[in-house]
Image (cartoon, rainbow, N blue to C red):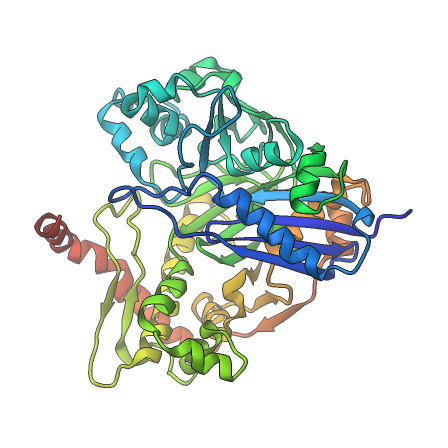
Amino acid sequence: MDKKYVVGIDSGTQSTRVIIFDTRGQKVCMGTAAHPPLIAEKAGYAVHDYDDLWNGLCHACDDLFSKFKGDVHEIAAIGLSGQRGTTFFVGEDNRQLCRPISWMDLRWRENAGHLPPSTEEMDPWCDYLRNYSRMNWMKTNSPVLAGKIHKYLTAPGYMGYQLFGGYVDTLANNLGMPVDREQWALYEDDEVFEKMGLKRSQLARFVEPGQVMGHITAEAAALTGFPEGCPVVACAGDKQCEVLGSGSISDGQAYITLGTLSGLDIVGEKYIPDAYKKLKHRTYLASVPGTWHAEAAISKGFWLVSWFRDNLAEGLDAKAEKLGMTTEAYLDREAESIPAGSEGLVTIPDWKSNWDKPAAKGMFIGFDHRHKRAHMFRSLIEGIVMQLKVSTDEMCGIIGKSITELRVGGGGSKSVTAVQTIADVFNIPVKKSVETETCSLGCAICAAVGAGIFPDFQQAVEAMGQQTETYTPIAEHHAIYQKLMDRVFSQCYTINEDLLKEIAEITA
């Protein structure tokens, strides 16, 4: 029987999405499950509960297969991706030793007080790895537990074990892992592992995107509904899969993701060293082996839309439901009536501090009697996009690349206000993916390559690529945004840094 379908799993911070696509890239069926909120054990910490991600996958599969009318045995392969930088700690009995530490967790900053100071001779990326290492934190703060760690895993590495019973992971989910990105391999030098507090034996076996990691076990089949024996294929980090799903695989193509983390990735066919010391961007291995992404990001990007909905839009859900809309769509419709620049209300979207702005806090600036909820919502979106543009300009200046084509996707791309604002701020036509679930589509493309449906990624993208809608920049809007970026965003943190530090000290 010919195989008709491929599956993409996107295990994110706030939810899991499991989508069945046909081999032309058309979405056949989708299942979703929300994750419980992250647990903040203390200020700056963020963990998932033990089984949140696995339960999320099982619940999303329940949702998926309650709707799917086809034959599950016609699924050729499953592509697995997940959030980057979230770390699992597993003991000899293959059980988790503690709650998985989220990529949003800041406890790694405590490493600085326990590790030897950096030296000029230290490779900047290796310096970053030893400082970011959750294992180094464990050895200092929980040495007994650290001594029991059998495996140190990414989210896909742990989820893969649940699906096929082996510890295999993808090289291209490399945040916090000892991956030599230029060589597309783990570091050969044992010193890198030692500085991270790791042993090689504590890692999964790493493979490239498009390679089979394992096959669905009978137990996993019973829990998920996937056919027993179906191959599970390596993908990349979730953002890199989004770039692939958008069809951006050539040098200079760029993609903006509007998810929990909002970022712009630009594709490079030659290795792009990142600016760790300049703190402007990171380089990631792409979904297509032998290519790279330079990424400028806002850690709490379109997460802020969820924050706004949950905290400042109380009561709207009922109104939206009567109109057959989501609360976010209702807010977006309100925002469309507000002029560019939100009549002087500016949002600085620093709800999470960053390397180069350790005292940063989010701000709404410029309130007056005209401003209502719609102004705040539009200003929030404008602030996210303008901050991303400032970071992108800094990154492109450092790496000497320019954007040849800009695409956008992710859940936030359902917002007409957001996509038009991107076009206006970046002053370039923007191609919006008709299929917003670009991460799952990217995973499905990897699955199709791994199953041998297509001989390479180029042909897979050509066959499974999607249609786009183009948004054209409006010159008057761009002029407003450019002035705000030049005269407000570029100075806001420097001007307010001392005050922000005072606030933190007073209210600690």
